[in-house]
Image 1: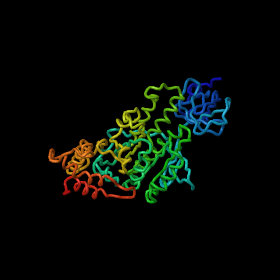
Image 2: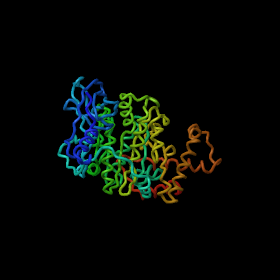
Image 3: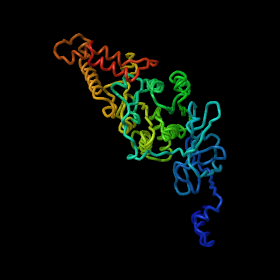
Image 4: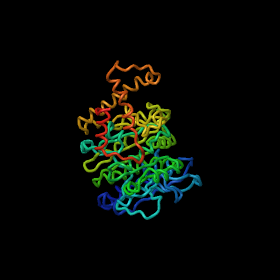
Length: 446
């Protein structure tokens, strides 16, 4: 039986009691809406439920939380936060009347949370406020300009792919291409006051390994880790990235320089695809429904500089078969302020970090670095390109010097450039030292 509309009740009582609708509504106890499960699937529950809104939380069977991902009349589509094992048709569904909320505070630093913001390490979580886990991007006109350099401590990035405070950058690579290792290097060496790291859809083994091997003890003290492994439900995996972004926004609002790292944005998109397809959305681009691309743009736009504080975003993208034009990679590249391409060829040659400099770009670099560095970076790129053009001739012994001065110089400096771009995981290079070395390998004596 359909419940009467609450607004109609309020209007009728206000006329009878000669009170304003607002005063009547304050005097009515909170209304609780219930429904019943109609159908249970692996990732979706269909329920009768009056009064549901997109994004509302529900309690299924008094024990399992779920989020409303679709509404059709008196029927709601629910995506559970945990396994649907044990649920059956006819069980009660209670509408909680609010969206997903997370607790925030300085006590999050050094802690490990699940995708819903709950601690999974030992110890009580001390927080100071609660926010709806659904932020929005800063107003474009209220954003401060990207003017300051964000040193990463990695020579290949700080020299020719210099990042700015508040920039959003993607790291694109195939599986096993060194994305997580590069993230660990950045986290341990960067100058950010707070680091928020989201590990989405990773193997459980990799989470502990990342903590122990890729993060120094000092970096862990200023890091909040949000973890949702590959065995978790798709909603939690998708929420992990959103939760990490909300936490980063909290610290940005306090005026902090925050580094947000997400590994990986591809798994966020795949989780959103599972939810969208289960809800009946059409697959329009390589199996992805339209909502995935809306969620991607909404997510990355939340990062960046604001009126106070900033979020510098580093997002990894898993490229299938080295295809940089597949839908997710292509979309993400169009949304971000730069991209770093990791090369299997360089990794196979033992060149780490395996950054393909000439295929990568930082779109804000020319706005934040001095003219001398721009000139040096441009020359390094040109010499790498010149060497690549004649590399085969050099290998077979067919190249003759003296035909082109620029190519001869590129060959002469190539070994020094390659040595400069290589860096061990535990090696740190300050921004000043990197610029000095960049000038030496491009214009110094050989």
